[in-house]
Image (cartoon, rainbow, N blue to C red; front, top):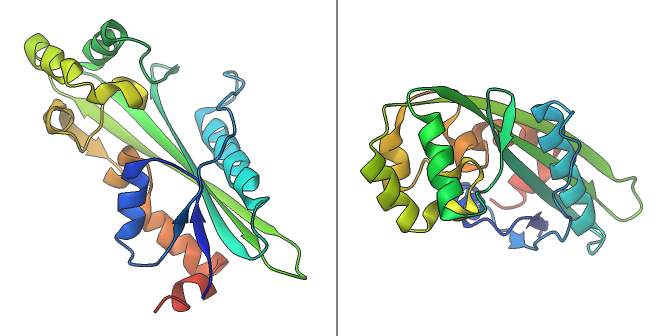
Length: 199
């Protein structure tokens, strides 16, 4: 059986990949998420995704490694994971009644004995528009602790995170952290044997 490895500890990415009903392992990359913020957001997520995939690939001889990275961009500023509850609250309030972008990069690193490793990296961008956020709702969401491990301080799949979102333009799953449609399309060309081998 072909080995697929997700180089991410994100439960959200794991859940999305589970939907394809193909067996995979999880091995978390130890790469630090450092980057030059002068780079374009698309370049940043692709660079980090490929670093993660290449890092985990060192421990496998025959496998397809999947690296991924997501950032939130508002008015040309990258919104990292909040460092405190107050930072999360401020971050969410500044997104109120405005549009931001969520950019996710995915890198596929294919290794096979006796063959040269191949890598394919791509990104997807979704624009998200928030409605007018109620300060009490934001405070309750922040108090839940959910924003603290998420870029932009929210998860579109969360209870409150979902009601903040008025409209999206693009793939919903890109905002969750893994563009499942684009991934499956790329896999059919780049590594179809990893799909058919699981059926």
